[in-house]
Amino acid sequence: FLSILGEDGLAQRAEPFFVARFGSEWPTLRLAEQEGRILGFHQVREGRLDMLFLAPDAIGQGLGALLLADAEAQGAVALECF
Image: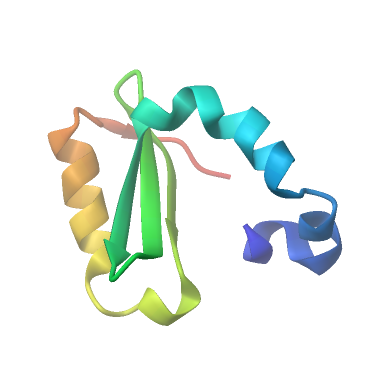
């Protein structure tokens, strides 16, 4: 979320914020990880891709395409973005 919120905005959101916000939505999140490190994730809800994020150093390696394909396989037919 750093690129969206900036340093100050992210600093206001500690781990409890994210647990409260996404804890109940865990079943809708899919993680891409390597050796225990999260490289990206997406969220599909009600047939739409709500979120797709990649770690900055994972960009340009095809991971985004893999996550998008997985989202489509999970039933995403629309994209919601801002």
